[in-house]
Amino acid sequence: MAFQTDHALAPASVHLLHDAASGLDGVIVLHSTALGPAAGGCRFWSYPDREAMIADGCRLAEGMSYKNALADLPLGGGKAVLRRPEGDFDRTALFRAFGRAVESLRGSYVTAEDVGTHVEDMTVVRDHSRHVAGLPLRGDRPGGDPSPWTARGVFLSMRYAAERSLGRPLSDCTVAVQGVGAVGAALAGMLHRAGSRLIVSDVDARAAARVAIETGAQVASVSSILSARADIFAPCALGGVLRHDTVGKLKAKLVCGAANNQLAEPADGDRLADRGILYAPDYVVNAGGIINVAAEYLSWSSEEAAQRVEATPQRLAQVLDYAAATGTAPHDAADRLARERIAAGHAARRAA
Ligand code: NAI
Image (cartoon, rainbow, N blue to C red; front, side, top):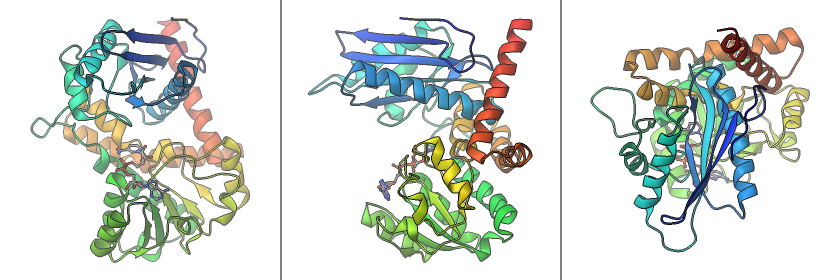
């Protein structure tokens, strides 16, 4: 199935993938190719039916368009979503079939890891298509685990936003970090070195304890981290943590973290603004990972990738300035700016 539209908000095309021999059942959604090839990871997950899978693919691909546009990357937005077969299956055969599907799109889609996929899967894809990133590191080229890059972008954004909205350096702030996995633990280390006081929480008690030992953080329970006495709340676990029933519990005056899709719905961004809490939009501050992926795919140097990650606070400043100038909440300002850039890309393509 494929349908074409030049509307900036609808998917440019939706490609259903089916390979009975390997059990591949999935979808590649190209949301926008206005600014370049549609880039976004491959999610491998259980879905009740194909409709749910396609809906998730469309939502995630649109998010990638916005994230890539606001990161100033020459990339559009796309996503692959594959249904995890029930019972035993041949993982290599499945990702070989996926690699052939990626190749059939002749570079209009670039894949990488996402929830449920790993470096080994992308290495299998690489045997069939060169339109893949997230491969094992080669020398000092960009690539490999994107988490430290993501953490660095979040840290720099938080430092900027704390000075802008709280009028204080991070050394004078308490930060509550929800989830100390790959990104959260790296972020906690950076904050510790910057002199912040830390409160951490994780469903994995050992992960929280490890970070507490390394950084002197206080450990909070999973249920109390949102209402911890902190200046800054950093969601680094799952999406959807900012909801109608949780925003009111926050004591922090700034939210800045790595988790994707932190707002359960856009209205939660307005709820934060109404409570005088500055929300640093997730996809603006957590773009370090996709910058690393872009650098790998586009063969940029490590210096170029690092410079772009270091520029994350400038991009956040643009969004916050735009929000202030237009009287909108930051989440809304980010979406509007992203849509403007994608629409400008479409217009430039039509004019060319
Ligand atoms: P991860 O899986 O390494 O860490 C997540 C941590 O959160 C785990 O330690 C887990 O035990 C914990 N956790 C899960 N539910 C929790 C809860 N209710 N309360 C407290 N802790 C909980 O994942 P990673 O890579 O650190 O990513 C974190 C978030 O950032 C995810 O939402 C991810 O989508 C997002 N992200 C990650 C990027 C990367 O480069 N790794 C790039 C952009 C976004």
